[in-house]
Length: 146
Image (tube, rainbow, N blue to C red; front, side, top):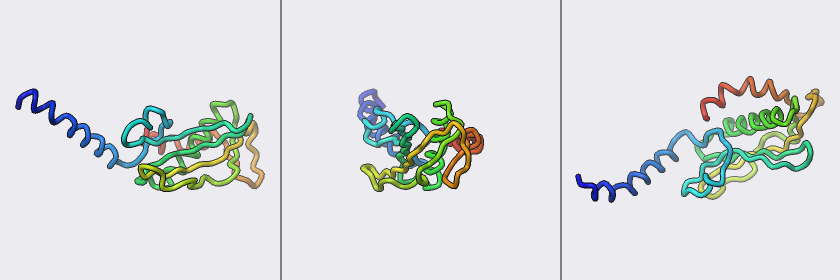
Protein backbone atom coordinates (compact mmCIF):
# COMPACT_ATOMS: atom_id res chain seq x y z
CA UNK A 1 0.00 0.00 0.00
CA UNK A 2 1.41 3.39 -0.94
CA UNK A 3 1.75 6.41 1.36
CA UNK A 4 -1.15 8.06 -0.47
CA UNK A 5 -3.48 5.18 0.46
CA UNK A 6 -2.36 5.36 4.13
CA UNK A 7 -3.04 9.08 4.21
CA UNK A 8 -6.54 8.57 2.82
CA UNK A 9 -7.30 6.00 5.53
CA UNK A 10 -6.17 8.25 8.42
CA UNK A 11 -9.52 10.07 8.95
CA UNK A 12 -11.37 6.74 9.08
CA UNK A 13 -8.88 5.34 11.59
CA UNK A 14 -9.21 8.43 13.80
CA UNK A 15 -13.00 8.18 13.73
CA UNK A 16 -12.84 4.48 14.68
CA UNK A 17 -10.49 5.27 17.57
CA UNK A 18 -12.82 8.03 18.83
CA UNK A 19 -15.86 5.77 18.64
CA UNK A 20 -14.02 2.95 20.40
CA UNK A 21 -13.18 5.34 23.25
CA UNK A 22 -16.85 6.28 23.59
CA UNK A 23 -17.93 2.66 23.71
CA UNK A 24 -15.80 2.00 26.80
CA UNK A 25 -16.86 1.85 30.41
CA UNK A 26 -17.97 5.48 30.63
CA UNK A 27 -16.42 8.66 31.89
CA UNK A 28 -13.40 8.23 34.15
CA UNK A 29 -12.54 10.19 37.27
CA UNK A 30 -10.84 13.43 36.20
CA UNK A 31 -11.39 17.15 36.11
CA UNK A 32 -13.54 18.48 33.31
CA UNK A 33 -11.37 20.56 30.97
CA UNK A 34 -12.02 23.16 28.31
CA UNK A 35 -9.93 21.12 25.87
CA UNK A 36 -12.12 18.09 26.51
CA UNK A 37 -15.20 20.15 25.61
CA UNK A 38 -13.77 21.10 22.21
CA UNK A 39 -13.72 17.56 20.89
CA UNK A 40 -16.65 15.99 19.05
CA UNK A 41 -17.18 13.53 21.92
CA UNK A 42 -17.12 15.44 25.20
CA UNK A 43 -15.05 13.87 27.95
CA UNK A 44 -17.05 14.87 31.03
CA UNK A 45 -15.50 14.86 34.49
CA UNK A 46 -15.89 16.85 37.71
CA UNK A 47 -16.13 20.59 38.18
CA UNK A 48 -16.05 22.67 41.38
CA UNK A 49 -17.61 26.11 41.86
CA UNK A 50 -17.00 28.17 45.00
CA UNK A 51 -20.25 29.69 46.31
CA UNK A 52 -18.96 31.20 49.55
CA UNK A 53 -16.02 30.99 51.97
CA UNK A 54 -16.85 27.39 52.97
CA UNK A 55 -19.54 26.53 50.41
CA UNK A 56 -19.00 24.82 47.07
CA UNK A 57 -20.96 23.13 44.33
CA UNK A 58 -19.39 19.91 43.06
CA UNK A 59 -20.72 18.58 39.76
CA UNK A 60 -19.79 15.47 37.82
CA UNK A 61 -20.69 15.10 34.15
CA UNK A 62 -21.01 11.40 33.35
CA UNK A 63 -21.52 9.42 30.20
CA UNK A 64 -24.80 7.52 29.78
CA UNK A 65 -22.87 4.27 30.32
CA UNK A 66 -21.69 5.36 33.80
CA UNK A 67 -23.71 3.58 36.47
CA UNK A 68 -25.50 5.97 38.82
CA UNK A 69 -23.71 4.60 41.90
CA UNK A 70 -20.29 5.20 40.30
CA UNK A 71 -21.16 8.81 39.43
CA UNK A 72 -22.37 9.45 42.98
CA UNK A 73 -19.12 8.02 44.38
CA UNK A 74 -17.13 10.31 42.07
CA UNK A 75 -18.95 13.36 43.48
CA UNK A 76 -18.52 12.19 47.08
CA UNK A 77 -14.81 11.51 46.50
CA UNK A 78 -14.29 14.95 44.95
CA UNK A 79 -16.04 16.56 47.92
CA UNK A 80 -13.66 14.75 50.29
CA UNK A 81 -10.50 15.64 48.34
CA UNK A 82 -11.68 19.25 48.06
CA UNK A 83 -12.14 19.43 51.84
CA UNK A 84 -8.63 18.07 52.44
CA UNK A 85 -7.12 20.44 49.83
CA UNK A 86 -8.74 23.41 51.61
CA UNK A 87 -7.55 22.31 55.06
CA UNK A 88 -10.93 21.09 56.31
CA UNK A 89 -11.30 17.78 58.13
CA UNK A 90 -14.77 17.08 56.84
CA UNK A 91 -17.76 18.25 54.88
CA UNK A 92 -21.53 18.33 54.95
CA UNK A 93 -23.79 17.78 51.98
CA UNK A 94 -26.79 20.10 52.09
CA UNK A 95 -28.66 17.38 50.19
CA UNK A 96 -27.76 13.90 48.93
CA UNK A 97 -25.76 13.69 45.71
CA UNK A 98 -28.46 13.77 43.07
CA UNK A 99 -29.04 13.83 39.35
CA UNK A 100 -29.15 17.50 38.39
CA UNK A 101 -29.83 17.27 34.68
CA UNK A 102 -30.38 14.54 32.09
CA UNK A 103 -29.93 14.01 29.25
CA UNK A 104 -27.47 16.72 28.34
CA UNK A 105 -26.06 17.30 24.86
CA UNK A 106 -24.08 14.28 23.67
CA UNK A 107 -26.04 12.02 26.07
CA UNK A 108 -24.43 13.09 29.36
CA UNK A 109 -25.83 12.98 32.88
CA UNK A 110 -25.02 15.65 35.44
CA UNK A 111 -24.75 14.72 39.16
CA UNK A 112 -24.17 17.37 41.78
CA UNK A 113 -24.11 18.38 45.42
CA UNK A 114 -23.83 21.55 47.44
CA UNK A 115 -21.05 21.15 50.00
CA UNK A 116 -20.04 22.97 53.18
CA UNK A 117 -16.47 22.38 54.38
CA UNK A 118 -16.15 21.71 58.11
CA UNK A 119 -13.15 22.18 60.42
CA UNK A 120 -14.61 19.60 62.84
CA UNK A 121 -17.01 17.11 61.22
CA UNK A 122 -19.36 16.29 64.12
CA UNK A 123 -22.48 14.27 63.24
CA UNK A 124 -25.56 16.47 63.62
CA UNK A 125 -28.28 14.43 61.92
CA UNK A 126 -27.30 15.71 58.49
CA UNK A 127 -25.05 14.24 55.82
CA UNK A 128 -21.71 14.90 57.56
CA UNK A 129 -18.55 13.08 56.47
CA UNK A 130 -14.95 12.78 57.67
CA UNK A 131 -12.97 13.66 54.52
CA UNK A 132 -9.94 11.46 55.27
CA UNK A 133 -12.18 8.46 55.93
CA UNK A 134 -14.10 8.94 52.67
CA UNK A 135 -10.84 9.19 50.71
CA UNK A 136 -9.44 6.09 52.41
CA UNK A 137 -12.58 4.06 51.70
CA UNK A 138 -13.04 5.19 48.08
CA UNK A 139 -9.39 5.35 46.94
CA UNK A 140 -9.24 1.73 45.69
CA UNK A 141 -12.51 2.18 43.79
CA UNK A 142 -11.51 5.53 42.22
CA UNK A 143 -8.08 4.20 41.20
CA UNK A 144 -9.78 1.94 38.65
CA UNK A 145 -11.09 4.98 36.76
CA UNK A 146 -8.11 7.33 36.62
